[in-house]
Length: 127
Image (tube, rainbow, N blue to C red; front, side, top):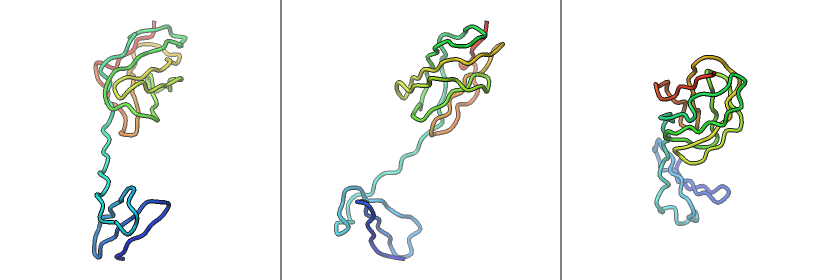
């Protein structure tokens, strides 16, 4: 189906036989030759530091997590248990409040790009 379509201020151009659709931002349908929006690829977050790296078994420690590719909405787990109060400060830093737990656990971040891999830098110890 070839043609130009407009829905809620976004022009969509479909070329005959084309397998892809290009979205054109801010251009009236008559000016559909405008530059297509670039695609956005998000990468999985990484955790490079957890500070402090320990806290009480009862939980409640505000932890700063440093890494890459942090974006909202984000969730954090400590050994698979959800943290509360997660706030993305920047693409390289977020804060979370540790849940109750025991032992040494992995702190993992899930953001739009995926979930951080387990690494030596993501450890948190309950004391």
